[in-house]
Image 1 (spheres, one colour):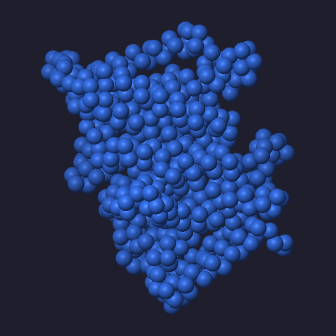
Image 2 (image 1 turned 90 degrees about the vertical axis):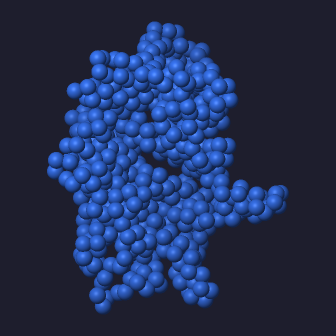
Image 3 (image 1 turned 30 degrees about the vertical axis):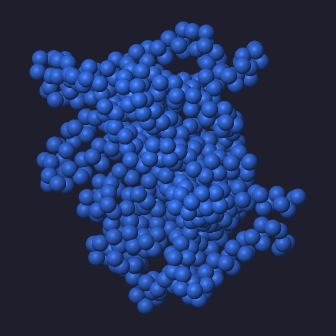
Length: 330
Length: 305
């Protein structure tokens, strides 16, 4: 394997992620652990979205729904007294896969912009379903008091253990997606992205391949949802809000579509940026104005973030991954 | 029965409002092939401008006209600065870029007008009601919305189907290179169409302002409804948008009005009052799913694109 700027960044990022708990243990900065657990979980979700969006060309604008469904599976089972993760997690994955099957079967009949809007509309449907879950907190959401129980096997209440489990699952997901897209199945899905009609002409029932791909992505994202509910100890319809789906798309595109580590890079960049932008703006502004005013100005960090998305779209089509590749080519 | 009629009128009014938004979206999509998520932001900006200008000028009509003009200027500026560069790109780029614009607009509005919502008070001559039928008084303002929106729909029809500008718009929609080659300034035409879309969004926003609070994010949920409208109607078809908008408006309003009572027959009254709004919000998306199963390209698909 040659050392390219990209592989250096990826390797550095993985080493950094592996060392976060050690740094936290040394400094006692628990916030960093919470932040990076969240980043890793959302990176799993973004990686699953990349499978359909990047490789399959299916721009799903409702992917956050599976985060919510997976989370609610854990939350509702815990609420009803089923604390075992051996029950919760398979249900989270299964229900997400089932939902993806229904949504995919209906929306994959459509193309292009119709597909974007239909997935968005189905996401709204599920979102309002969550709002209507009267028994489980409706709009206010549901508190998950105990993390999933895995008996003697693993104790998720230990933050470090949970962190490494999430990291392991992330690497497993990236590996799974990599294996999938390099298999015959993955090549068919990518072929259907480039030219669906031609793939069908040479005898591939592309609808079924694309639908399977869609379901796999939904199932993985359901797992991420189960992790997220365990992490935050809380699940609400807001997890499924369409802007969350937008965030996932941003992560994928920002990091670099159709690349193995792009979604991870995107998730880290977006979420760290969300934390850093207010600080940066405050520092920058305090050079010109009173400190109190600088704090006030830094509250408006989104006015920088929004146009940033536009700039990525206009000038960095391949995302950060593409920029790193471009560096190698010079 | 009178209640039902009243709710039908409410549904019609809401549907026509949706039509104004959806018409702008579908025009911009049909002609520039641009998915504009930030259309809802123009709706919001229109409402904010209206609340401000009406308070400043002390005249509802003058304020409304000023708000309309100001939003058109904002819309055209956005088109020239940002969106123009997105034409011909992938739809995913449109989604991402305009998603960024939503964040920008929400934050910009927070900076200019502050986080608290605004209210727009109706002038006295509009806060009366009219006897539509014996025993049924209906607010004048809502009737004014219905009449205005119908007039705009007629205006759009005449503009697109009967004028030279409309001919250029339709020509640009079916073949942009050819239209350009015939000496039409396509760039200018696109900016004008975008301005027209912005005006429609602003009109919807300012007419809704006195009914709801003017607040940040008000354009987002209604934008998704407008998307549903154009999916049901067939993307790019103004006629489809008109029929689908009225359909969606009626279903939504009547669902909201009568589902709680229906649910109360099977659920506790507290349960019914939580579930009913959610269920009636879901109703539209269910209708959309059914329409898509039967006709994947909407009720009035625009052929060849």
